[in-house]
Length: 268
Image 1 (cartoon, rainbow, N blue to C red):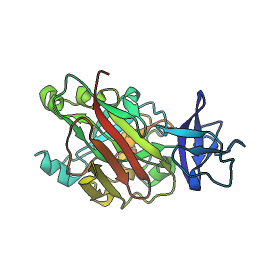
Image 2 (tube, rainbow, N blue to C red):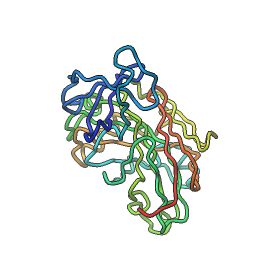
Image 3 (cartoon, rainbow, N blue to C red):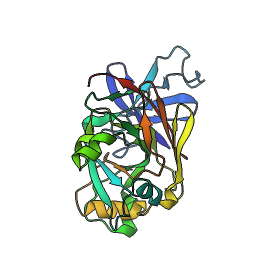
Image 4 (cartoon, rainbow, N blue to C red):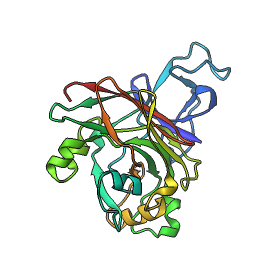
């Protein structure tokens, strides 16, 4: 089942996203209740369905959740550690992105003037469904609501210059997520791929992560409390690389969908 957030008139609401572009608004986030309202809408660009009037106003997809934080994992693929000339971590390497960095599908990634190199990083994202603190690895999946695509955009030159990652990872628009939340997925072996202007730059399987999803969630929960709607980005495979203005970058997670954004020059 798929859920997301949509712009409905002046309102931003969670919604269930059915087949054929049908959108069913919800009064609450789906991890609180999956009950839907009676209105039937449709996604922009989708074909009209018999389930609603063809004149129904289409709605636009937003970032699928509003996390209190994005917890990201560095160097979680051996291939990426190798390309960065870094030793493989012996425990998960964590960093945070602020919620102000979040954008949704179709929104522009803005190149910050102080950066010289802006890279893409395709990742499988985990959406937390209930409060998680000091959880056991064996029970970690009970705290997952669903899955999404994440682009961990990075100002690579600033990451190297600063010697730590906060500034390089935290610019506004540097955390595209979406296009929605998929609740039915086996995260043990899914394809994570990135394409820039249609050309594949990254492709690997989550089966090759150094720390799998249950181990990550259990470890993170011993550091900080994960709240419903929080996002855990599980790390990127090799193939990271720079983008230039007007590049269109697509992050695809098999079984979830495609997150598409454009990099533009501008002032944040």
